[in-house]
Length: 416
Ligand SMILES: [Zn+2]
Image (cartoon, rainbow, N blue to C red; front, top):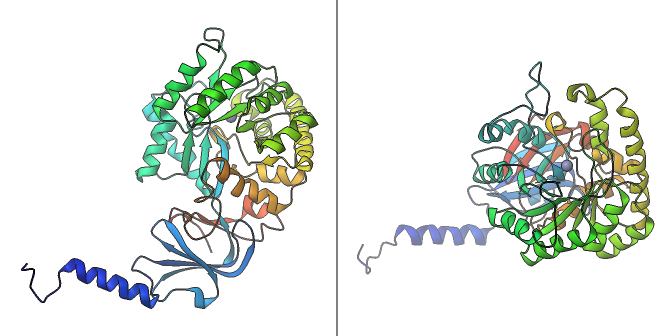
């Protein structure tokens, strides 16, 4: 085209049209408005709420018909209560079981690539609970990294993932020590993990033994090496001494824990360390004991651990410790990711505080406080519609999820 041509080129036309639309306040072609009867945006309730979405982001939040931009496609969910997409801080999404008769959840040999494919089922079950982001804490063969990439690219439908790769643990054939932790952390960072996970004590499945397996000095070396590489650390400890040492070592979050002393809680509150108590996962192990083939009588120790775990959460809530929702979901527990919320309320949190434990608190822990966990301009369009009022009855989240959007895409649509 001749540069002196009086006819503007296509690009100028598009640009001019864009400016006109912008000045007129008219929605762009892909703009959508989602309406909720009420909505909790991460800090307050908005009545007759309108969430305007462009692509994968929220561009405006308002109230009433006037807040709906002209020309926007409307998703009318005024029968429902809107929430930010929820965050589960502790999953094992690559732990998949197909319930095939004669098999157990654990110990079914399978190629890692096959597991990644089949674990899409866990990913879907997770979305159905309103969870749109997870932190996955222990997977072999880079399966968690693979799922994270597949979901991020849109090739797989599932929650946004933050992953740790294989957790660090002290094993007889590979003890952790001051000499090897830097290289073990370095190898994980190089592979592309978001987090470093440490198994600081015994305890998993039917075993509730909290014996510490990683010393304070080893924990400190791991935390220092990870922080130097720009990665956060979470430490698993069933027992109180491991929690205490993890807090002293400067871990960013702590998984599990019972009989935690008040001094440690004061320290956690002061340092802003997030506790992910995972009370509900032992309830799941009691319910699923036959699937796993646990020995008879296993419910006694599991129930006892739940009581001591919950008692610690009660004191942590009073001490002002930041608490995060983590399901510790494995195998058939996917789909029950938010049942932890009921325990948090039982421990003394208000329903709104419990919602915070599944939204704003984990978003900040993940370093995503400006993009996840709230419904506000600039945040990812992660939205959940539930029946009932979760700000007064947390069970609405457990039973009433009717519609879920992740990054602007409706991923669960079973409303009406
Ligand atoms: Zn776990």
